[in-house]
Length: 144
Image 1 (cartoon, helix red, strand yellow):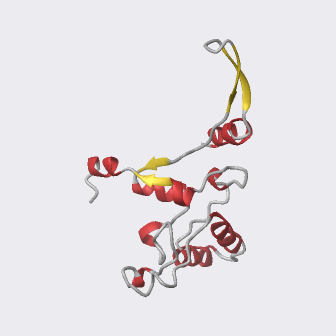
Image 2 (cartoon, helix red, strand yellow; image 1 turned 90 degrees about the vertical axis):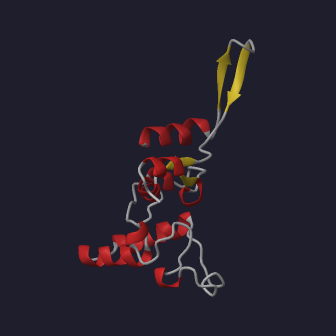
Image 3 (tube, one colour; image 1 turned 90 degrees about the horizontal axis):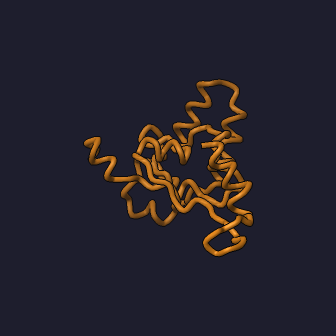
């Protein structure tokens, strides 16, 4: 995915001029990523989310798994953002042992993936919100 993200950040987002025989001249080309679709494990990986193995399994919020479905949890919910994920990555990088790092990943529900290209500051894309689960793929794999 790295070459694709490089192309989007370096050429498509800022835009460029390209010859267009149809219009008989140059046209301005610009673009980005609108959304990505994946099955659930891949969607979690693209979003740096631990998924069901974490204490905060939701890709979107920081509600502990023991409070999911509780009406009170919605009042105090703090949503995950690109910045909050990167802050957790700094804490994970500072862990002295692999065991402590795994414990922190499980507690936060965030995987340590500092090289995830979708978390670049220059990319106008929010992997937490813009990676969706393709339910057709899940049905084909008999996931309910």
